Amino acid sequence: MDKSRREQTKAQNRETILTAARGVFAAMGFAAASVRDIIRATPLASGTFYNYFKSKEEVYQALRDDVALAVRPQLREARAQADTAEAFLSGTFRTFFRFIAERRGEAQPAPETSRFRMDSPEVLAGFVELKDDIAAASARGLLPAVDEDFLSAALAGVALEMGELVKAGADVETATAFATALFLGGLPALPVVTGD
Image 1: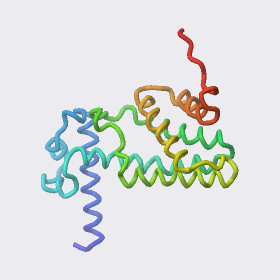
Image 2 (image 1 turned 120 degrees about the horizontal axis):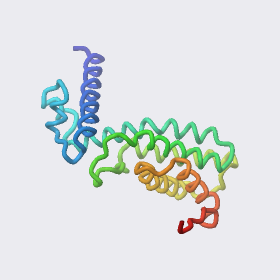
Image 3 (image 1 turned 180 degrees about the horizontal axis):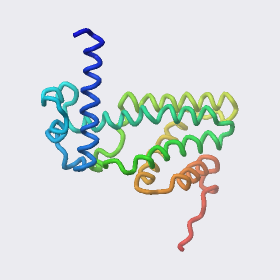
């Protein structure tokens, strides 16, 4: 078997495992699912699974990394199109929150594995892209010249935490407006919640 055919087979096997895992997690839930359940949902031998993944947690992280890879170009495009600080911020938050809302029906894992692993290459690359986009927006005069590390960490932290609320059903536009107002005007700019 030539190298390109071997690489194609490896890619197909990996995708077969990930597709099966998505279905198993959706049907059984992450906590109840086992590696054996994932293997049974594929036409592959059990040894093949272990050539790609060591555990169901690794499979789940691979699925999450695929999600990170999918959203990053959308985020970059939203930020590149911004012509004001408000457009930069709201575009970033809206894109991220919509992406999460579109996946609300997907299987939800156990709480201990439900968040992105922050040290995966795909997630780290997303943080670097955010920092680069902040620097570019500052150079264009859209954002003030502030510490890019702090601002990117603050934006990512708010997006990830509020993303959990969106995943649980919070409205995308309400979350976007809140997060954008927080960064543009601080606490005084946030809407007041009444006891109604």
